[in-house]
Length: 278
Ligand SMILES: [Fe+2]
Ligand SMILES: [Fe+2]
Image (cartoon, rainbow, N blue to C red; front, side, top):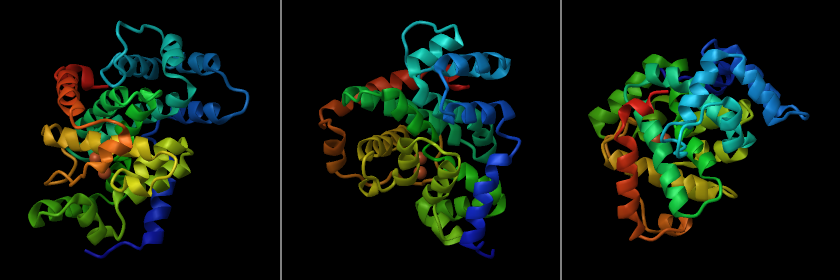
């Protein structure tokens, strides 16, 4: 199979914004969020006009991704709780759900598991915005969706190579594309004007030390996705769990003794499979 030209890959991924898989109403809401004179109230009203998006917003805030105790029954209340900065990631998380389901078996479970684990770790580490880190976990592998949507056959080839040759998926992607899903995700999230914290998590979750300001978030996502892989939840394309050293715990601000509690809480949260379908 001929390796596609990197310039072309970038171009194709960047044109993904115009695909019908992102509902037009989400595109509108996203531009509303970016506009200067916006407010939670305005965005809430806009979301409320679309029944299917409203239903999904309510489903996600009541899911273990956020872990708010008690039921949240209005979009406005939901937005108040998560805040403006998290709305964007949440809407994109919702709208890539179908794409994830279609692009790779098990990727959705891997992503939602990573979101939940990211929140649990963030709370343990006393992070002030666990919701944002959770969304970073949800979308961290969005580059896989982008690559497999633009190049379905080549992506299948990368998955096959990973399993047959025992490679990490990033190694197999490099062989097939000359880039990894981290790079692909970076192109996509930069093009879509994601918040910087999310762009960093998407770009550096395999190399958190390359991340600057958001190294802590990026490290949490890395640990979270590894724990989820160890638990055998979902499928990320990797035949193995990545190596990690203790420095990552230090970076996050937790100690080894915290891990057993973290594991138990994650296991509890992913037990209800129904709640994990958005
Ligand atoms: Fe992952
Ligand atoms: Fe990844």
